[in-house]
Length: 312
Image 1 (cartoon, rainbow, N blue to C red):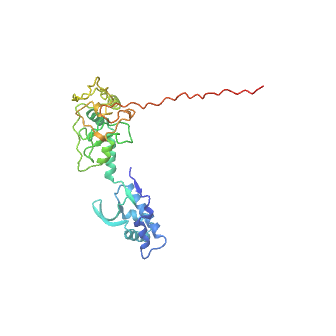
Image 2: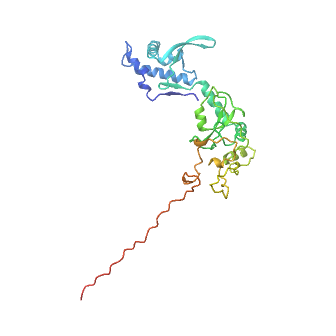
Image 3: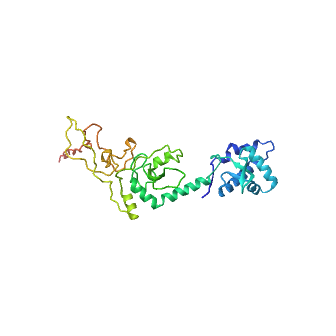
């Protein structure tokens, strides 16, 4: 949908206030010029003219030819408009270009609106998204971080990203991406971000399993697989482990990553929020944390003094 935004402080923008600096300025020119340009900008945005205001639009908004000449002169003096030549129906015509200043007026361009609509169509197309999630699983293809479908706020939330911005997505050019990487990457027309290799064993959480099964391709959940890590070298002074660590949900700790070939995000990793109480250790190797012992209250029953009896 086309739209036009006006800055919160647009009424006091330097371009607006410049109207009172004209030699023939009167009491009405500032507000009249601001309203005139605003109406022209609204019309240009509604018909996706990308900051171009036609002469016909300007004359219609001015109300009369005399006011058109006066308001166009004022708008050009202030810096609202510059005169340009545009091609309409194969003919060069005079028009006006509205200044592109987000603090004054900002309209979505026609190409931007079409791209936004294309992205929505791609991310809502199960013929694309089912195959992409089967291939990538629940991991960002840029940082390797596990993602959470349905999380619409944190950087760990799951999204789809187009490797080639501005072009319709295909199975090969659409990838699973965390919201943090998607936001930092932006449109990236130079494609400076590179994707990680396709995971050999994608990790499927409950949301992805349900989504894929809904479209007729059942898969087995893999977020609870038993970790397969190489045997660690035991230090002579350290006691040998008696039991292997219990398997946990994928992504809670580096040790529980069920896919050692999958890139682990390291210290920037965002956990699940259900990884424990925060008392997993004291920071020392092999030192297990114990909850603090609360001292038991002692029975401090006050000794009762014998009652004194009066003499008969």
